[in-house]
Image (cartoon, rainbow, N blue to C red; front, side, top):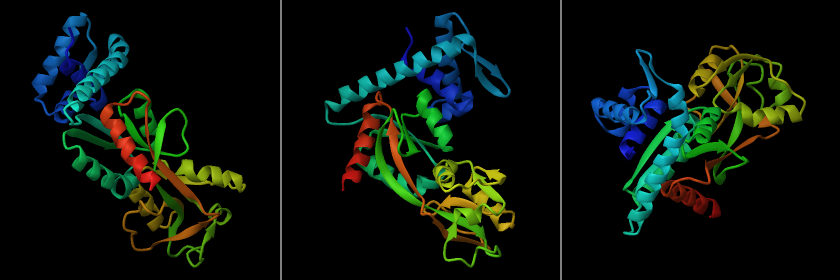
Length: 287
């Protein structure tokens, strides 16, 4: 019969893309993780993974088994957490996917509070674009994620808000303005952040009849800022998540004002630990 260790090892190897990365995440030796997956494959009588120098990929049997393995891990972990909770101690794992622009400002303080309140809960945090966060939530690789609100099909709590601002070189013709309209920005070469910002301002741009001519794309805000600093265009980014502005880069309020409303989203089948984190954010929202 498959054990929790075998199932967790299999799922983690898939999520991390290699046995080495999976062993680090699980806090086990690489041989131990390899043995756990090999034993699972022996029980099935079929290989679940294709091993190569480039990493691992799923076989047909592995792809079929992965979803069931995730569910089994979630149920077994939830059972353990609920039984342990009878002693008054919350255990388990909080797996949270965040956006780089908000981890330091909005997420980290909440994780610190949660960790102090529930020290026996293991916290796993990883970052990606909003599209990646949604994919991780859909696949079950993360049980909680930072998303732009509103969102359908998931339980949510408001985490915070960020004003979106126009970003431009200090030498740009718009730098002397008190604020900058979408129409004015659209006349400049545009640098789009692929980290989730576009999903916030694009509907506003369409509403006011503006279409940006995208010349560059970059995922990290620091990369966007460097392209702006080079004088290659302008952008729109969240003010609260900006790293230190490089010399030669300025920000201005947008017209119309654009606000990014962020929340924590979890699936209906989330673990007890994840539910506790959502409740913490909900309590914050009620104050």
